[in-house]
Image 1: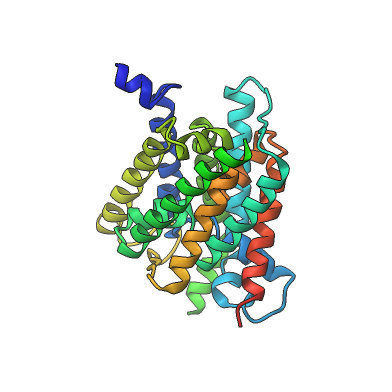
Image 2 (image 1 turned 135 degrees about the horizontal axis):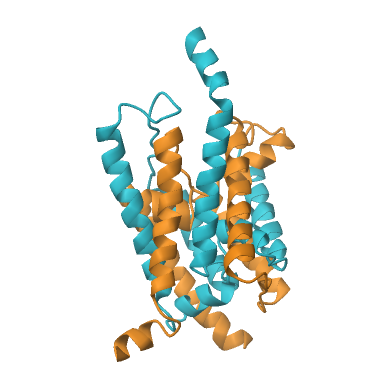
Length: 157
Length: 145
């Protein structure tokens, strides 16, 4: 009980249940449409609507851009249901400074696309299909994220 | 081929609704597990709260079972003609990309899913992260030949 409190100061049930629900979303997508639903590709595929360069006009982006946007809209919808139905309509907010969101976000977007996956693509779908390259990607980004988060906490606090 | 095309058109609506529902379940889970709060993610990365391990573990478990079992139990997905795969590769780009992704994730506590889902829970500040991610993806594409 003490260990549980120190590992999970805010409880653990909502984490596990939430994780099972996230997995169920990706699983439902697979069973109904056969698709592998990572999240970061939408940030490249959506640019294909406006950027004509050959990189963005690849079939893998153009052919999937429609459903990826619908999937992203679903994400917003699911969060809205949670907000209205389970969180009492109190809006979420973050105190992380704007520049950190913007600069951190830039690296997240650049890195996820260069590395072909993020926490959902390599993490959930890649590990879920037992792919060694995805495991190595996860270990890599976990390591640099631990470093970056702790360095930032020390130097920027 | 023609029959397949007709079939695809016929199934466009159910497929879109299924994709929306799957995304909604995903987004609800991200919210319910508080992964849409950058503070909670950063708290994990600073070893104060190990909840993210349970989120990741729970999600991987369900996906692992589904990816394994569905193709054995079903000849094809309900609304498509085959199950897709997405092989990942380990090369220089994957290594550098994953490393940079981690640096950014540790700085802001936001990854692509929560950046999108958070908007549905009124976390407008995450628009900054969303803009950063979109810009990063654009620059990555533009810098490729």
